[in-house]
Length: 376
Image 1 (cartoon, rainbow, N blue to C red):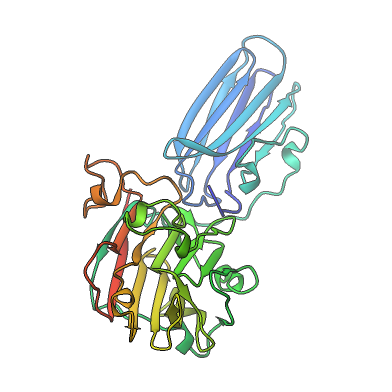
Image 2 (cartoon, helix red, strand yellow; image 1 turned 180 degrees about the vertical axis):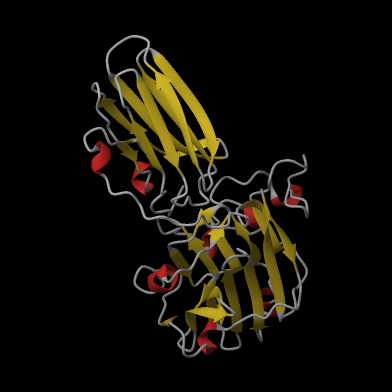
């Protein structure tokens, strides 16, 4: 899993005598939505206990009695999502008569690729502060698409009095790194997930998309054909394609980002203002936005005003793609994805959702597409 910080799992192992080991798993400290289950494995004294517990706000414990062997025990904790281990930690400890030892395992993002070994530190780790687990209702593997006109679309360039960044002077196909620009907006208590991934890093491209993940996507619209729609090779992954086309930012164009707080709900808006098609024509004037809505985890794509004098069809999206796509390989081709978000078999999530995709009829502007997550 990408982008999550402290998992806030604390496993406590204690022993009051050399024949008994008790392991407590305290998830009241708060567990992010990237983990839905904990698996605890306790081995020692000729015994092994393997238990799984749903991640939540509770304390559970298990006891193992030594029947033979020495006083060495191993405690392993694994955080799982959909049956896959996403982080793990282990500790080897030896217990002495009439002594109590504490073993703390704190799973963090450093424990994703390999198990964190806490054998040398054991109880010397700092226990995370108590926290309420965030709602996980928006964690979804599929989305529905609503072409409603009742959702307000914001131009981030017009927002005043809020933290914002304006990106100007972009060369064609330059991908913008958000570390110095959007990081402050994302760190300001903003919680948003796309296809189960916590958004903590944003990449903005002049080719009309926003991508999330550890590394720059490096996807450019002039290097890929949209003929096969959103599942064709070369598209960005874990991304929102507001208007995926070969675009440029002329001297008058800019990309703006701003955090909007309305009634206590934050929305991160990214707007392309006065963009043009490639090759840039003086008659082009494309304006569109992406909104990432906190709590609901909805994605809003708004085509505000899409004008062109000499390339009317392209400005209306006849060669473009609009949609969202996850980090994994799509479950099926775009033509096989049903409106429910499932592939033709009715059980496999498509792994993407489409507002419009070539080949298509022209889309009028303004148009709004709302991508709603369906809880797993």
